[in-house]
Length: 525
Ligand SMILES: Nc1ncnc2c1ncn2[C@@H]1O[C@H](COP(=O)(O)OP(=O)(O)OP(=O)(O)O)[C@@H](O)[C@H]1O
Image 1 (cartoon, helix red, strand yellow):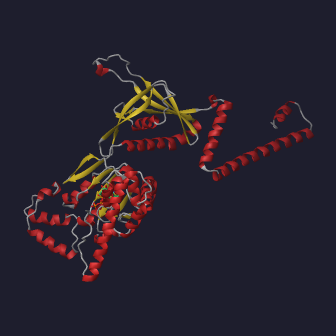
Image 2 (tube, helix red, strand yellow):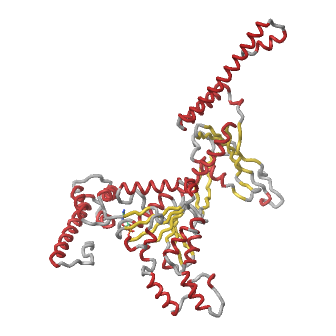
Image 3 (cartoon, helix red, strand yellow):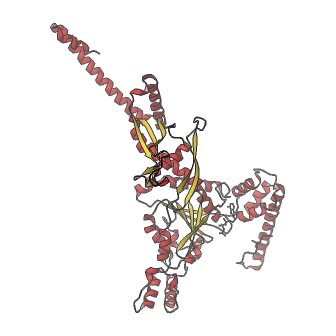
């Protein structure tokens, strides 16, 4: 270094001119060092702004590799995070341990390890039920390496303590099991990446894996409680026959919804999403709900409002729904009194004098006052189930008592719906499930026969543009034979017949000058 001559010069007195030269050299060295530091800062800042994350990660990984290769790993300080299987003195399972183990099961290369263990792990579902999965695990002492964002993380399975077969005072009961843990080690400089990004990533991945393996359930309400069954509906977005662009929009919307936890928090809105599915019967509204549940891996809560009489009971049911679930209310147009307000008042007055079945009311309504009957009836009128009660509750308390929930209303008659349900901001997406179009037919033909083309396709396309046939009707025709030629011929005949009837009906209307209100052409033959 340039400043070394200064030390040498201190032992031997130097002439003034020599002093000047040494001082110049020292100043020059300082200026050079300052420039180098400034350039380094500048280059770093530019790299941070100009290079994409992936490139910077690759550069970091390259630098780490070169350091390890040429300067040896010994000089680097390592940090270790210990994730114990049990916490609180062994009384509680550590969820992070389970998550890390599930994540590592996807990272372990079975060919690289001589001994492996298999474990059956129980996962708790948000609704309190459990599901089981089988995992490939490392044996104690074994390690595996994972690379995240260019940083290398080493996982080691550990087992410590335990009585190792020795029996305690109480026989087997006194024996202490060994303590299991997973150790995550990394270079000290990557501590922030490890704690702030890698561990959350491991947790999120494990949750996704768990959700994929989860057995879905559908819950139905009986008076005041939900009753669940396993839900194996085969509908998926691949099997749903509909306009392809609309299908893509729905999938994108669900994806966006799932990723936007922080976004919803930032804008101060509840993390929920509402869909209104409308269209004629047999166009796939219920199938789409099942496809959404299968896609999100959310349980379904199918609310039958005829089982619920008052808002309080409804609220109780809704509050008991866990996160990551879908609330479905089918045929919402039929669920509430569609009469105008004035009519409802007179109905309420009539009910005041009629007998009331109080068994359907929650115990909160029990009361021993002398005017019990009229008090309760009046209370009931206040609490009577209404659409506005439902909507206000969903927007209010329900939104704050949980998150990541989807609500779906279906109807065959959108025009009959209360304006309160249709107003902007209520349902995030209105989805029309219509008659079978060309995209929908191609999906069905592909799913039923694995055919993407056929000599009858042009005629089917023309007919579908002219007549109204639901995907349910088209599916029904395609199901009639396993031979694509036969099934497509039957479908073509069915569509031709429907067109003939429609033409005949039009002619009749013109001749009679009468518009029939009853659809006489829908019958399947
Ligand atoms: N779009 C579709 N894609 C695939 N299959 C469909 C579709 N629509 C209807 N189907 C078939 O028809 C059957 C009935 O459809 P689904 O119950 O989903 O219709 P819906 O619109 O909910 O009818 P409703 O209004 O009467 O409740 C389904 O089981 C499915 O086999």
